[in-house]
Length: 83
Image (cartoon, rainbow, N blue to C red; front, top):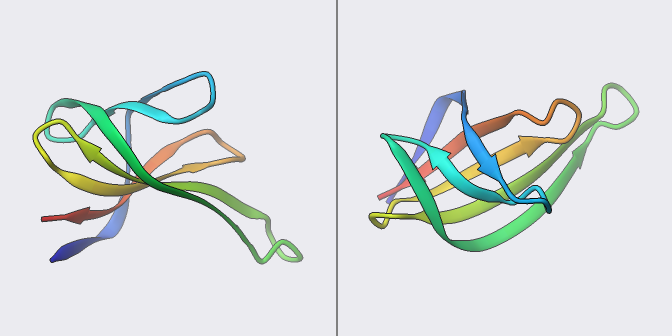
């Protein structure tokens, strides 16, 4: 089962030199055990560019979540949590 975060919230992420998440501040600081998948989204480039790198990660303690990095701002946001 998964839970969509209805109001996407900005989170604090420590990232590697390759802009991949290493630690995530979610229910306390948690290290990233595994990046399960990664994909890039480019939407409505003709109106207002939206470019994001999405990651599905497993955190310490077994929490799996989906987060993204906004390429324009560098901000990280939590999109979904899987139980």
